Image 1 (cartoon, rainbow, N blue to C red):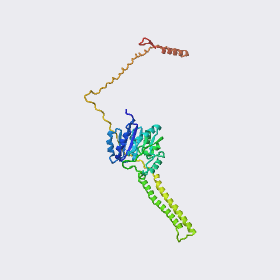
Image 2 (image 1 turned 120 degrees about the horizontal axis):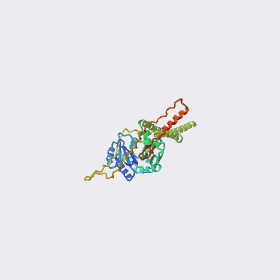
Image 3 (image 1 turned 90 degrees about the vertical axis):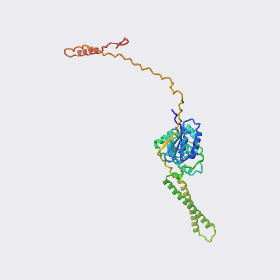
Image 4 (image 1 turned 60 degrees about the horizontal axis):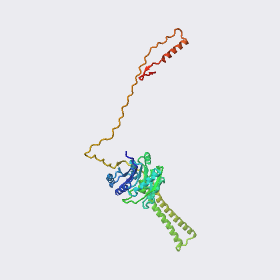
Length: 397
């Protein structure tokens, strides 16, 4: 009986043909000396650049590689759910195929799992790239969605226990977001630092910020965006105009000499204009900056169908020609002796009914003495024992 798979590595990919070959080679180098049974499940999320054909071409040389093909493009969460659905390992690791994370860091997650036995081990990037568009905003949104339990909720390198996967599938089927739901459901959570590298091929295909939202939410954010820029500009303009008017009135010599009342009004107007314009500018900027934090995360999409293509098994060696066919040289099995037939006991002959003469009923009237006499006679007849011969020569009661 083949040992059960210990680790299943799930890799969702969408149009990653340029990096797939390098990723598989890097994975092969990292797990070449790994002793436990493992498998690599690459989920093709409806790619159109030939990624699926490339994966099928790599399968004959990679016996651990299994390919799952979705019938359309559903997103990263749906691809991970499909991989978890068809995985067989006691632990399931998720990693992206864009070479931003090193497959050897999976061993860090496994070491943490052996130490603390958690339901979920998540990696986090200590110094995330600052130039990543919307990364900070999405990090805040996903941190709120996961209950603030993760240091880096956008890191795709995670290790999930089989018990947590089964609980998620039992309550939510195949429609849930592993990025958000699993950290909330995990009773014991571990986190380890991992390395991060910039993308080498293509561009980031994972939609961030408002681009990842449905059209209604994206339009709402766009209204905030369109309102914030004019409001910020108008506030700054009003504040600068009030400051310039105040400086011109009091510090530039002119023929106008305002009275005390006019001076007070001008000072009040300058103060209101400056601080009012600055407040409008700051409020507009805050609305534009923080509105994206309040937007919901993308809803999970359930995939319709998935086809699993396992790696072909090596063919069995052919029987060499010119040799005798294989014979079973094992010693014959010990044949148990036939069961001994039980010796039939001599059937007890039916007891001859001896006609014992019954005492005649007493003549005359029935008295107490006659009743006692009949009872004693009946007990004597029933207590007589018939002696029967046995095969051993002894008598049998």
